[in-house]
Image (cartoon, rainbow over all chains, first blue to last red; front, side, top):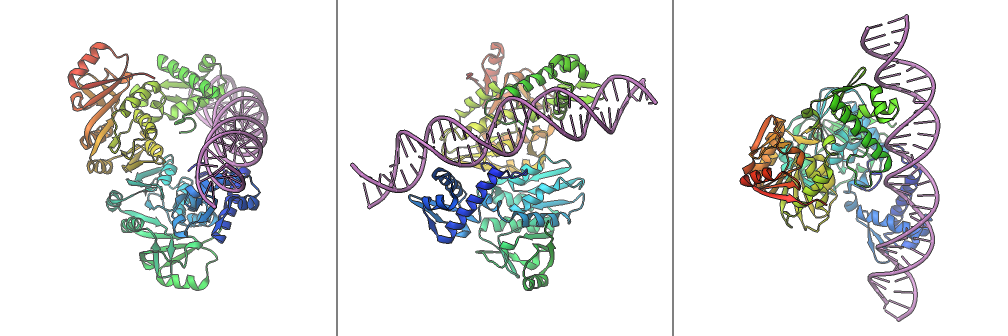
Length: 271
Length: 271
DNA sequence: TAGGTTTAACAGTCAGTTGTGTTATACGAA
DNA sequence: TTCGTATAACACAACTGACTGTTAAACCTA
């Protein structure tokens, strides 16, 4: 991550401009499949060099692919894995989910946090409340960085093979480490779900998430609206396996009704 | 860590002034045992408020203890444990040690790095060389942060209970994780040694360092000059247990001769 | 080789952060 | 209570670093 990846302060006018320009580029490229650089300079009004730099960054994040003469879109399954990319979308929704999750935590509890950007929002909030001593387990490096300096937080890091895409420790040893623990609540998120089932596109992630589910006495699933009513290659677990599902407001009523047949659904209020 | 903890760029006139002022304060307090704040404003020429802020920072680092009316020195064994404090002293020497250590590493190797600031210097250099693929194991969070973005580095994080003082993962699960691994070289450092024996003041650290020694086919000990001919509460291991000892130039000849009777000594050239 | 395309190098602008001091208020010990 | 001490609040200057554009060189491809 180069610049404003995990920042908290105000986004700054400058960075904001950069953000919206890159978003416009992504939207355009995704819509058309391909685009030339000059085409994008006209779209954004920025200089050739700036567009090139934006494209380099987006390519590094795996969102687009550069070739001589222009760029093309990546299949969504590829770039949606990128931790860096996911951190920037649906932030308001994730914030709301995190707030709702916070309400489930009581002082003295031990909780586990999986490799998801939604959970990073949750981690940031854990220090705020005087939740008293709190034990937090995670394999997600950005979460560790956030939690390490917090008072009253006992951080337990899960080690293993570092995975750049997810910015987390995975693999056999991570699974073993998780298997050796039991926590009061485990907070999970995944990339896709239907009313009946949850999914993820990567088998390695499925494995660690399953181990984490085993380690939690209660399992809470946090899902922003973009992930609902979608599937991915690998099945993670039936929806009914989760004790609570936290979603945002504005989800289709029929879907919510279907979900309520499987588990307890909590609707997180915005703001 | 607040500001210029792990920076690399030029120290800046301002920060440099701050550094030397704090060093002067520490020197004064250590020499006299105690000091009043007004006394220190005269010593440094800074305002009352600035001195207070310096003292707050030093107290947070564990170097001095504040009380109403002034400050007192901490026993050296206390503040010498502070990762943040140790990072700022003997940097040139540690740099030289790291360079020498680098020469022992060959492409494709797997290495382990323990919880010591000297090793952080080493970690920073691992990306420079085109050492080809390199597997690096560590329980030291700052090292993980440095290594995570490096190309060609396969990072294996050792998890466990996070310890704020050392900025690292310790405890039973860390030891188990280390015990499950074997690497080509393990790079260690410790707080004190004599010709015959190595020491550390904290039992938890001794335990993990011993586990790491077991995990390494070759054991390399990096020691800056301030640590030589000193002891600490707990014995870590005989000097002869290390395959190589890397020290700086300028160490007393007789001591070097004694050390050479125990192990292979490498003298790191400055620069 | 000639066209456009990409990268490298340089420099300027601007925003945010840090370090500092001054003043005002709160605190603690005698 | 009272005086010295400690913190909080505000303001300011300096510095850093991010972002951008321009120009020049290198590169690819037809």
